[in-house]
Image (cartoon, rainbow, N blue to C red; front, side, top):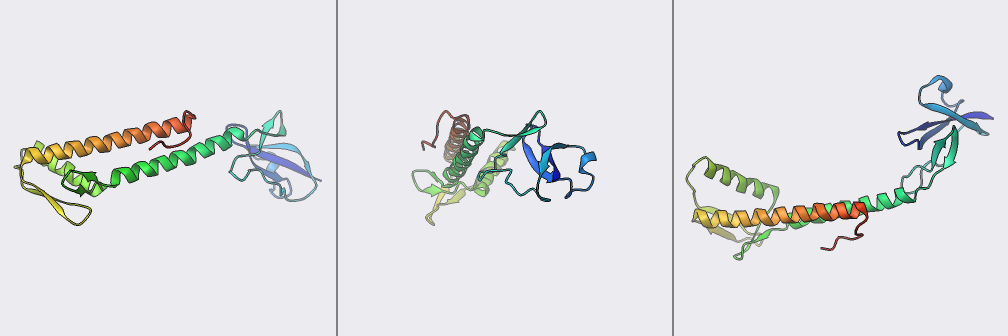
Length: 182
């Protein structure tokens, strides 16, 4: 029989199990607690379930099976929240319908719009702005007020999509809702 040692995380969940024959001097190493004996040289039982949750915790120096149902729910919620983030990015980057065409809302396009706003704030004269549409066409703004009205409306839509995505993500993580309603 070999002495069995466990290492735990901050929540006292067992994150590793070794025998004294596989790690020389394990008895003196910090963070390892003796939890019993094992018939084989190598501990070969799983310490995580298929979702990656630790199966055991250390209670009064003993390995005790823990309830992983909260972990499973939390993992499932995290996966759904990540899907919300992906959908939010897709909605933001799918373009903005100006009424005359759908213009790009890529990060590059958003940065270009910000640069035009910075130029305006610095007093640089407005020049004609031509924006490509996602169908290969273009829209030209020759009047500063028209361009900035469109840009403000576009950024408000992007902001709303982002805020809605954050709110939906938080509701899924808290368990208030289970699916993205968009």
